[in-house]
Image (cartoon, rainbow, N blue to C red; front, side, top):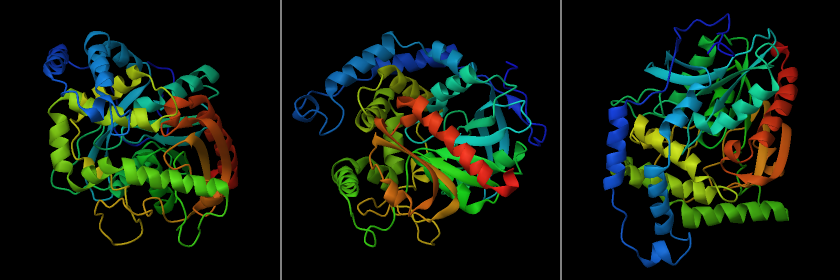
Length: 410
């Protein structure tokens, strides 16, 4: 593929084209493992209590049957390969070498604005496919106003596994992403967007690197609530929703934070186990019915790529206190997880009503220099997949404001 694939002139990294392909033998082995994976017995919690206690047995039965008999992985590989794919090696902040996979839509426009899109968990670059399609429909390579870079974060999908001798943190991942953007020739400046984990990567980059001129997110930090108690119905509702999530649905984060070795090994043993674990999140964190095929696509790629290794290293976002020397201890029982350092650079925020903690604009203003804000009634935690047109429009609006606001980026 040549369209949108011409590397920027200033690129200095050794970058090679990449094509997604799973060997047929491995694909058949996966299917056999899935076929042999049993579904647990029917109990009250998975048959008669709705989604209160997690994924329902009937849903898992249907998902297994669909995954085994109807899901076409080759079709999804074709979609991955319909975008320019690349791999390269970069260094993170600790000096580790990371092989990074990324999608890109490179522009031939000399004034194109570089912007990186970072996925979260459970997710991958496939979360941005619909947005990439919208951009290709709207712009040709000659008039695309952006250089769009969509990396697989370290330890995800086709990027390399995390080092075995390093307690990997998202600050290291952010450093690797900065190295990628610099190596692509964007030393004069770039912007970032992220959701979920990607929002934390984005914030670190905006805080630590001068070349990162600002961030746009669809998961926002909140101010210290003991100093900023709810003063409106909107703030009170947002706080109650967040507290309900912490009290009733955050157990997975404790497990991944405190016993990642155990949960990682358990989920790696069976594709059905992994599907149950991540499928529940897509069902619970989205606004309305989320397509099963998209869940299976993400589950398949997670399974094929990294067998859910080293989860803890990439989920220090829970309870994270950036800018301190305190070690992460997996605690999520306090409302400190989203109380993050203030970003002075131009920032944008898309608030989707169905998110886990829909931080109101009044609180977002206390977390960053908010120059662009939009609120949407439709969409949840996975906004790029649930309402891609709205999110893309928000990002484009933000770029116009943030890029013109920075003198060095003009």
